[in-house]
Amino acid sequence: MRASFCVIRVRPSNNLMTNSETKAHNQDMSDEETNKPCVVRIAPSPSGYLHVGTARTAIFNWLYARKHNGKFLIRIEDTDTERSEADLIQPILDALKWLGMESDEDIVYQSTRDEIHRSYVAKLLDSGSAYRCFCSKERLAEVRELAMKEKRAPRYDRTCANLSEQEVTAKVEAGDSFVIRIKIPEGSTTYTDMVLSDITRENSEIEDFVVARANGSALYNLAVVVDDHEMGVTDVIRGNDHITNTFKQIHIYRALELNAPRFAHVPLLLRPDKRKISKRLGDKDVAEYGADGVLPQTMFNYLCLLGWSPKDGREIMAREEIMEAFDVQGINKNNPVFDVQKLNAFNKEHIKIAPIEQLLELISPKLQEAGLVSSDWLADEDNQLYLAKVIDLMRERMRIVDDFIVSAGFFFTDEFGYDQKGDRKQFVPESADRLTALADAFDSASTFDLEALEAALDEVAEKHDVKRAAFIHPTRLAVSGLTVGPGLFDLLVLVGKEKTLARMRRAADYIRTKKTEVTP
RNA sequence: GACCCCAUCGUCCAGCGGUUAGGACACGGCCCUUUCAAGGCUGAGACACGGGUUCAAUUCCCGUUGGGGUCGCCA
Image (tube, rainbow, N blue to C red; front, side, top):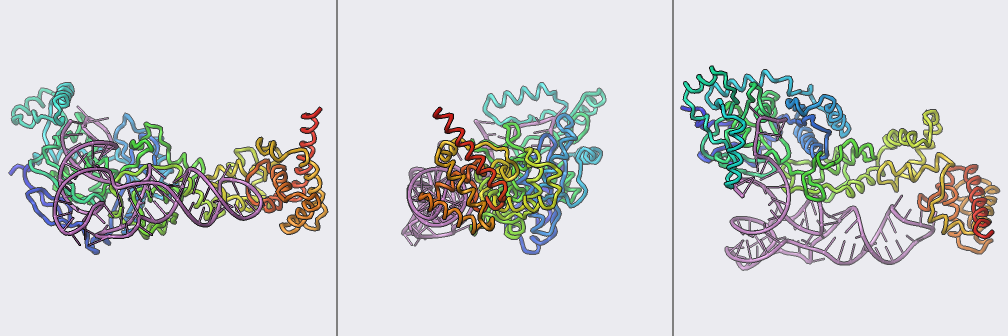
């Protein structure tokens, strides 16, 4: 019997079948099977940074592993020496770690497994399920082009599959270079996808693809099958751009007489213009979002909700909550659009509930970079306490962490200008005396706390016979340089008496100068 | 072009034969008030189309259209 035509029985619990086998589908996995320890992996290639699409796939894998008490592994697919760069690996691992995901075992570097891959190429050749192809690249390109022109699917024409043993031997002895192609049998192939249910493909649609290069090294699909098998991967969860690869890989599993894992193909993330997210189009690195002030828990949460939901309306969720509710089979089939606005909205909510230590850690270096504080200043315990109070006051209105630098800078420096619109609107001539009067009232107040300040302001406003607002707005502008921000009295108390008074009087002077300039 | 996948507000998600089709982001209005980029309330906004099946289709089936993916000695 020719191996390439025999029907390989995959393991009974498996989800592969051919059309000649009407084996029952097992979409509903038994509890026993669901709870069996699983092994999943994320396999990035170091041809660039980690973009949100890959990050999301990693998250789904990670959740699946945690949910089923399994292992989450990382394999670096760095066999393409042309494109892979070693220094691109660490940033990818860092980004995964930032999101809270690390490999449960040593990271596998595919490039170190070349010999093993080659041994499987030999097995394929020995069993007769693969053959040598001596066709030149030029001829192949012509065939492909012609097929496209004639509106047929471009597929290898099997010229070399029909070579006699003698012909092959002769060519090999003549030193002709060859690649190895797998022989795809007749029939059709169906597998049950955990997300997409049954998918069928005619085997005739799949060409005898190349599994090994002229130099004998394995190509992607073979290497993946070999490594997944040897790593004990039970569930392959990846982007649905791999569906065609899945069929190819299934044929490799069969040719090798190995059990195939379960597959789940998750929808691809799209850009607002509906194109697939890619590095080419300048889509951001996951780490870049982090650098811009998106919290890792926000990214994790948001990415999960692209194509999946807990069904009960919850959106802002902690990792543990998501883990609890996650279910691969609940992943949608359609491709969602990545929306930065919603990501930011999620971030706003996560900033509100984030541990203060995390925000402190994130904000401190940014303050220093902005030149607002020094490392000495940050080292001081009282200052840390002060910073924590400022963050707590500001976190209610922050969308991304960087907002803090622009909207809270005045807590750390006297060097700030006045918002232009605010200047025109609030720093009118009469504000000068009002600021002076209010500063005096604050000065003579017994204490510098919420109640005392508010009482002082009410009293002064009444004396001047104007609304509180006539004092409040100029004061806010004088002390913060901004027209928006937290409650005024909270702000003043935190800035402190000395600085508040100085800034109010400084603003009063500024207004008087402005006045004389306008009317000389 | 061939093959595969998909199809509910602009976007994300809910809905699993009978609903005033729900929530979130974004957008508009109103309120609060000391500001808003905060908070509260509210409004507009969707079942792509055509056939079936059914007493009844957004829900099931088929087709059309539209979108996405794949078609390398890349991964």
